Length: 131
Image 1: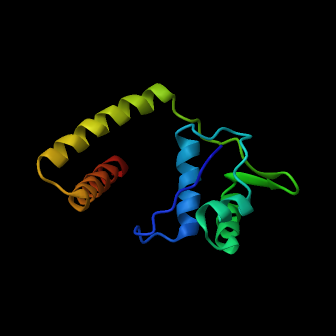
Image 2: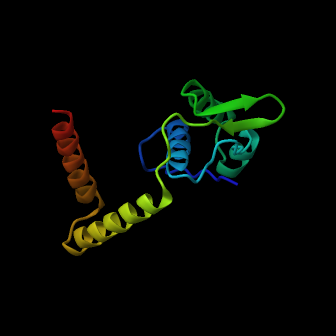
């Protein structure tokens, strides 16, 4: 079963963290169409957060057509319009990124510098692709 985690130091609101985790899990194939998310009360118990926070996240995911709530049954992952990339592609990309991160940390960059460098290159590359 899918388990949510919260990073209290991220600065990202808890409900958005839940939404982002489901988005990423669907994208990476960890959650498949038809999979049931934990019940709101289960998430509340596991994370010790306000039920309204979890309900807000689930509403947001429904508005994005990421999931569908079924009264009395739970909340289920929808079929996605864009195809999920094959696991082998993610595995290959993950290996490359892991190698890059190890080199960055070995060169003395801290997490903040790594994030800044990644974000900078990501934006530049994205802007080049758009132009």
